[in-house]
Amino acid sequence: MKRSDNFAFDDLQALLRFGHGKLTDTCFLLLNIADAKAAGEWLRTAPISSAITATPVPDTALQIAFSAEGLRAMGLQQSIIDDFSDEFIVGMAGDENRSRRLGDVGDNAPQHWSWGGQPNQVPHILLLLYAHKEGIDPWKKTVEGKTFSRAFQLLSILPTDDLGSLEPFGFVDGVSQPKIDWAGQQSSDQHERDRYSNMLAAGEVILGYPNEYGLYTTRPLIDPGKDSLASKLPDAEDEPALKDFGRNGSYLVIRQLHQDVSGFWQFIDKVSGSDLEKRDQLAARMVGRNRDGSPLAPLTAEPIPGIALKSKDNHFTYELDPIGNRCPIGSHIRRANPRSGDLPLGVFGFISRLIKIFGFGLKRPDEDLIASSRFHRLLRRGRAYGPILSPEDAVKPEAPEAERGLQFICLVANISRQFEFVQNAWFMSSKFGGLQQERDPLLGIREPLINDNKTDQFNQPAASGPAQKTCNLPQFVTLRGGAYFFMPGLRALQYIAASPTSKSGDQP
Ligand code: HEM
Image 1 (cartoon, rainbow, N blue to C red):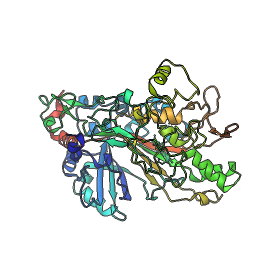
Image 2: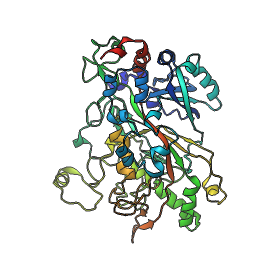
Image 3: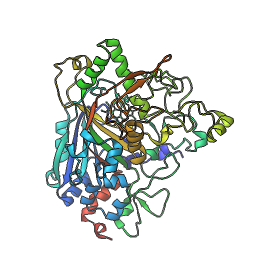
Image 4: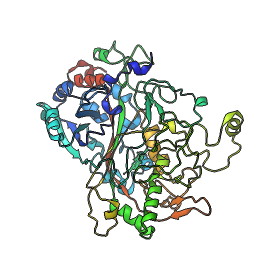
């Protein structure tokens, strides 16, 4: 039987399978646990949405995720928490080196965040509510029920707004996502993965399943002989004698990213000499797509697993645009997902592979510098916030200031190898794919390096002649808050709910 036939969708929170895109009204709550027993009581019957398909499609959804502090506050044994990854336990803002790697310095530094920036300020719970237009208030009332106010302390409601399919700079967002290989059909063997595939092993996003290395990501496993509460958890596939607390769960990364929309468009307008065509072209090249979401890179006729051949927005890799004449190497989407396979571009067949393995035949500096995309994919589930400001209005000097941005959310099975790697090595590093003096054009901080080398440029290679260089890019995006959460499977959620009243919490 293929795994998709028996994939435990009923134990999976829906957000792992669906983006709830039609549920345009949202309310993201940051909560602390005020009374763990009352919280357990609420959790036992909370209408958390599972990933099973239903007809008609539900018109509301509810998802929940816990920080390490939240799991502790629910009375989970420390030994279980210790088996989560270090990044999750230490937290997004809990280590200066991590902050430096993520670009969380200067105006982005945790001490300036409005939430989550101090160790004792990490929210216990992120509760995500979704409903149809105008439907969020009644849904919130239903969700809260009786025990809610006794169980939780509301820290804040994160702003979210319905901007249609756009993000605040005015580009269509949410176009490219990995396709989860629910059936476990695709090989993880590097000999069969020279080229890019958009199909991603379930274990790259969901704990308890093989990842792209063919391995199981570390997560808490419990001996049911020592903890009777664990008997209801799923079995660990790789350790059948143990129960898997992580299975069907995922890490949820959230970052509130403020976008300076007028600053972005006014800068681009200035360097384009207020020429509309040049302005749109530069902005598109920074993103890697036009505002309507269409890609700059040419579509390819070669099949790409996990992307329909007829997809006009996604059926491309960068093989037909190796030096970035069409879609610059430093553009946001090319950094975010270089669409690379296990071997660099242009390496086909046995001889070519051998030459590459022995390090000969390097034609361009970028050839060996971009890691295979499949180990660094993210399932994005963010939402925008703030009033819409069109690029046409944003360039006007009197453009109204406002808090606008993205509640960036991604789901991953390994925070450091996926989210932190992309953020650090591909966005914030000034060395990427042969580039030297630039970081991500949308997200990058612009501080020079210790040796004073600049990092505030953006290069557009030209088909003939030197690259077109844009200098002195300001910082367009500032971090307002963020945290790492764990979104448990529904059976693990019942374990958490029972923890405050069970004896297991007292076991050594
Ligand atoms: C305010 C901040 C951001 C803005 C305005 C922004 C905007 C965009 C836009 C317009 C696209 C193209 C549409 C699409 O393919 O879905 C995109 C793609 C993408 N972004 Fe961002 N983004 C932001 C932050 C981030 C962050 C923080 C990450 C990860 C750490 C990220 C990762 C990605 C990925 C993985 C893609 C898809 C690339 C592909 O598969 O081709 N973005 N973003």
